Length: 137
Picture 1 (cartoon, helix red, strand yellow):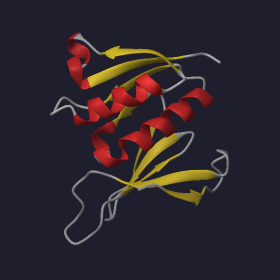
Picture 2 (picture 1 turned 90 degrees about the vertical axis):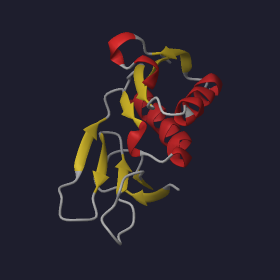
Picture 3 (picture 1 turned 120 degrees about the horizontal axis):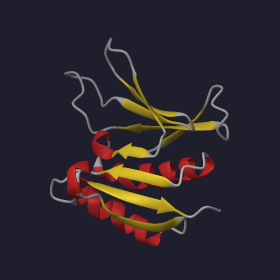
Picture 4 (picture 1 turned 135 degrees about the vertical axis):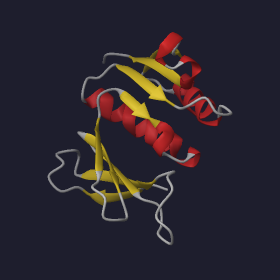
């Protein structure tokens, strides 16, 4: 579930988003958290490891997220990319049994900002990623 918290110097509408992620936490500790803001996705660990930051550059790797969080994460990522004028996205959902792929594609079919999308082919990920083109406003 998403929890909205005030952002410190994020410059991003005054908020950032924290969510639980689909990773193996240390024994006896809850899931690590992710912060999503206009500049990056930060995976915050629950141990002494350093947090990991991934820039918002048009590629969203959904392997870090539980399937139940996929919709909210994708919608927020699209919103941020539009604000940053990033119009070509690569959504990595994995091959697996297509749970995340089906969620992603259902969202993309209904999203007003989506111009078109298709499965990535060849050595770029085959059907483990979807390429999205957003409308330029």
